[in-house]
Length: 283
Ligand SMILES: Cc1cc2nc3c(=O)[nH]c(=O)nc-3n(C[C@H](O)[C@H](O)[C@H](O)COP(=O)(O)OP(=O)(O)OC[C@H]3O[C@@H](n4cnc5c(N)ncnc54)[C@H](O)[C@@H]3O)c2cc1C
Image (cartoon, rainbow, N blue to C red):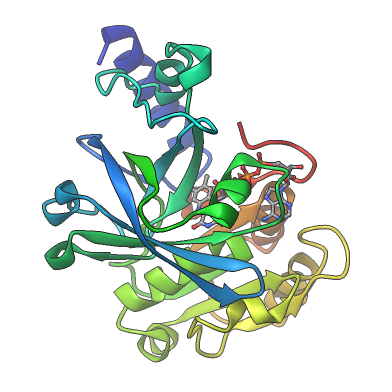
């Protein structure tokens, strides 16, 4: 990692710590090639892709919603991986010859099985208009893709008190993994963790046990169902919120954060992340 890159990362982390809960950075960023072992349709357009690679036998996650950069080979080309020594993976990808340049999108590790050297990744497919969705839609066993480690976001595991998790379908795999890490939906609810989910099609939830989650069906733009519902829910009062995590479409995550702040939650106790942006490539 170059010195300039290290300084930029440190400054960005310090700045964000003042306005948001901090994510969980990794000490290392391993990168390696994987092979698709299986593809399963979970319902509502959600596809589970199972990857295998010898490196996954020793890989250690740093949090329940650990995410990674999925490097998808250019159409009709073998997988080319960027320089693993460069911290800025986008810049490293841009250094590759254009015809070999892989597409890059970020996905959450839904499950990791070191004994089988496998991970499961649940991807929302929404047609061919984005490289992530298009790749997942045509993925077959034997396909190759790259893994670039990144970090995790959720930091509420050791906290006592009320927690609020807000998600759309792209962040449902993360919520499922978080609930599992807390002992399952029942145990999580007993310790004060609430889940507020917005989905376009409830069928996308078929493969998940989210316990007594508040589920809202979207009829308009992302956030239009869950954000007002969260507002009404918080207005009913209850214990103050010790920690909140809001991930999914960018305006949904930002709207959930604004609502939490308006109800008195300290900004530094809220982590929020735009997983994707309506009308715009994630880039
Ligand atoms: C930390 C992190 C973790 C993530 N984990 C997951 C995960 O586990 N599962 C998952 O599915 N995604 C996850 N995402 C989102 C993922 O990285 C992609 O942004 C998403 O899959 C869209 O990529 P794309 O290439 O298909 O579309 P893009 O190239 O980003 O967008 C192309 C067009 O498609 C639209 N679009 C993008 N996504 C959707 C959607 N869901 N519904 C409708 N239209 C859409 C955009 O608005 C745009 O107009 C995560 C993102 C982050 C940052």
